[in-house]
Image (cartoon, chains in turn purple, cyan):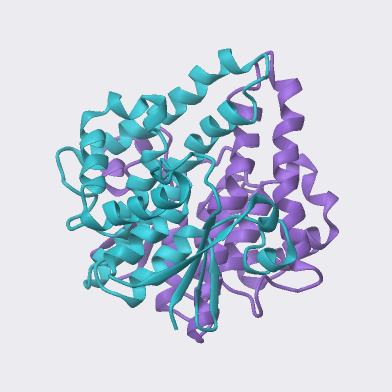
Length: 214
Length: 214
């Protein structure tokens, strides 16, 4: 059986690689697993067939034989647990890598999601111009702490892991805002992730869907 | 070695059980593990000794021998992986339970965190009164999807799991807003979680710290 994931028929970011299927593609590439992609339209995402796979009507989903999963973090962790290249073998180091996965989605990403929401869903509201600096300062608070912890380390905790995959992916969402450039070691860290051959293959695969070259 | 977790010296919620140490206490109680608690003041949370344990200066942390972890979701998952009572034995069911853990913290909790932020950090802002209904509608969108998926099921996917522990804990944050009452099956679900003996012991333990009876 070949693994099948879902992705946007056309990503709202026009191929910048910020849609969450890129995270799963990256994990599959690190683990050197072949996969197929089923593209889903915005309309189909809200229909019963897709909702049976993903109760919140989003992408990506993951199907492998009789296992169907949703939630990017869980899919990446599942891949990491069953294949090489994404989690350390040592039990304690493995637990710490998983801690960074949760830190990426539950500590770093929420204020970033606030910024995305403010810019997209509240773009036309009279308060947004005055409110954005507050939202950005809350992101800076987290980036500052992360920057202090990382120092000049290449990765979050020893070798590259699924924790880095998730953290780099979350930080990438900040690139359009310019916030990442305020933290040179985090910018370098993100660039280090993007330079991995597995990331490059994942990025190219999503770009081929979302911004096909003429 | 006894497990040691950290918790607020005094929780900002005054003992409502919404601080994240309650989630870890609950997991430890489900797994029937003894533990010690080290209480940390707001000042000490920002000092080097605590930041070495938790780079974002928060609670809870988890120490067991030479393993030190932060991030509630990761701590709960670590406990669940090494002890009984929190994850199904079947591999596919286990992966789905972990998917619900990530759904709790990365799909359901972010809009709830927006509400908390709006009410606490932006309480004095001129836009907050007009903006709160938008934030609440975004939470309703997620609750509606969750409510549809759950129907009359007792738990998210078969037997109680760490996915339910995380989801009930996240939904509990909504009680002060009244939003939970709009979804009877979710209210019942949360009450079902609160009725578990392990939850009751965890709640009582945090209450003893935060609101000691005279």
